[in-house]
Image (cartoon, rainbow, N blue to C red; front, top):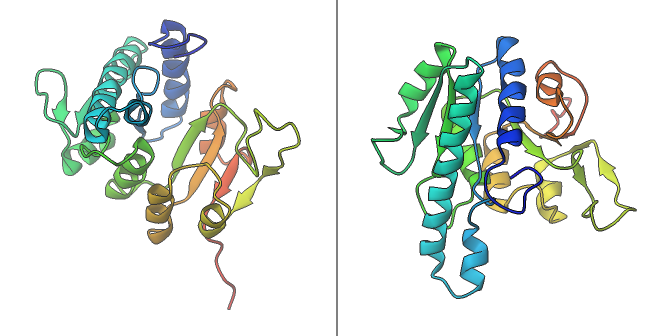
Length: 225
C-alpha cells in the first residue's frame, strides 16, 4: 500500500524487491507470505455483516493479487520467483506443494506463498508460521511499520516500552498484538524463532539475517541444567 490509502504502490513494490534482492544476494533462501489488507480485510467485512468465511476467501484472493505484483517486481530486479497458492488457480500460480517449494528454494528461487492456508478463520500470520514449519525455516521474520514489539501500541502511546526479547507464553499472557494467538501457539509448540522488525528502514532485512540485534526476538530461552 505504501503511502496510499489502499491498493498497490509501485514505489513500495520496488522498495520491497530491492530489499529482498539484497537479502537474497547474501546467499539466503527466502520464502514470503504477503497479506491482503491493502485491498480487502475479511475481518472488517465480517464486522459489517458479511459472512466471515466469504470475507476471508475474498481476503485470500487479495493476497494472491499482492503476490503476483510482488513476483513481477522481484523478477524485474533479476530474482527468479515462484508463487504457490493454497487455492488452485493454475493460470496464475502453482498449487502449494511443500516439496516443490523446498526444491525452488534450493535452486535459489524466491517462493511466495499466496492465499493464506486456503481456509477461512486463519490469518496470514498463521499461514506464515505453518509454511515456515513445513519448509523447515530457520527463522520467521515479521516485517512491520514499527521497530518491534512494545508493551502497548507505540503509534497511539508515546510512553510505550520497547521489548527486545520475550518468550511465546508472555506474548500470549500479556495479549501483545504481535500475531494472533493461533500463530504464536504454533510457533511455540515447534520452537520457531520469530523476529519482529521495522521494514521501513532500508537494509533491515539483510541486517536481521546477518545477526544484527534489531527488532524483537520471540523464542523460548534454553534452560541451563
